[in-house]
Amino acid sequence: MKRIAYSKQSLKALRTMQPVRAKAIIAKIEDYAGGHPVDAKPMKGFDFIRIRVGQWRIIIDEDGTVITVIKIAPRGDVYK
Image (cartoon, rainbow, N blue to C red; front, side):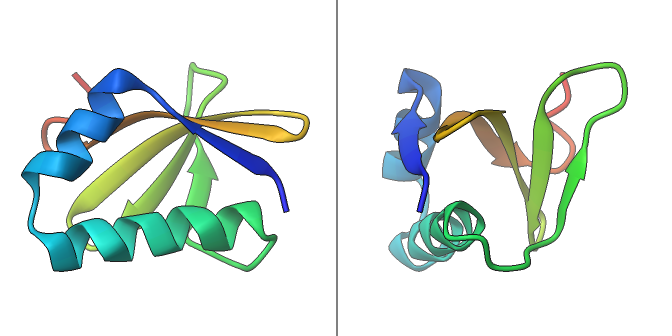
């Protein structure tokens, strides 16, 4: 399993959302880190990966054994 690091912005987003949704997002990130199949795609024009959890999007940067969660936001706001 790869190590997971969270940015300040992503931690703030997790703290402000509903606990059930936050647990679902954390579980999806841990699934990705463990090598389980998730809805993840590379972003066009960037070296980041997008993970989809319902209407929420998680932007991550994968660097060898470390996964950095850069941003967590609703679908319409995450790409700005």
